[in-house]
Length: 212
Image (cartoon, rainbow, N blue to C red; front, side, top):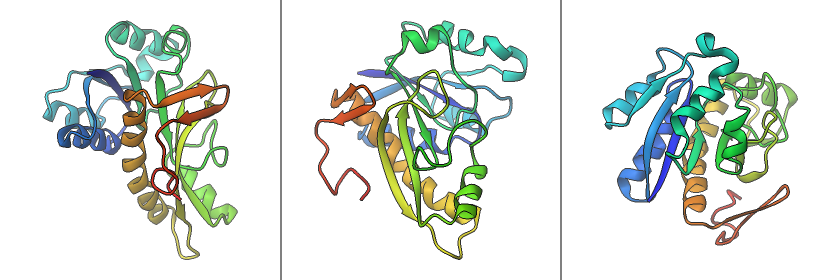
């Protein structure tokens, strides 16, 4: 069985979606650790409620050494690292040793509204400000830059003229809760092949898994 770690910074609703999908049997994996880079993140309480081992590595305390501390905890312990609303930038040995084994979910259709400073509600504010007709979420591999790794899958939602950042966030979040478990499932099934920037999902069925 695949072993995963989930990294969070806040409420952990995407973490909860992973837990729920493990409970139903959709995901055949175990969460070995949940790590927060912020004190007081509610996601830690979600993890504890299911008996999952938790760690708090406050980014204000660890600073540039945060990735090294995460690497010490997870080295040889997990097969996949999942960033579920994790706001710190990873680097160093952690990225090298877990190449194509770290995934992130971002609340837009990358390459739109992503990169440095684009997180949380800011993403939805920019999408509405720009006047896009569709937004969504992206699950991608993590590389040594911000939101630039190969895209695994995306889900699309409409953007309405009466939307607020909050209403758009809620619509996108519902898709995040589907997309992240789907991406994890593809990976643990061995259905994902990375060729440069192109990610091939070997058992994807058009119209079913693309979000279209």
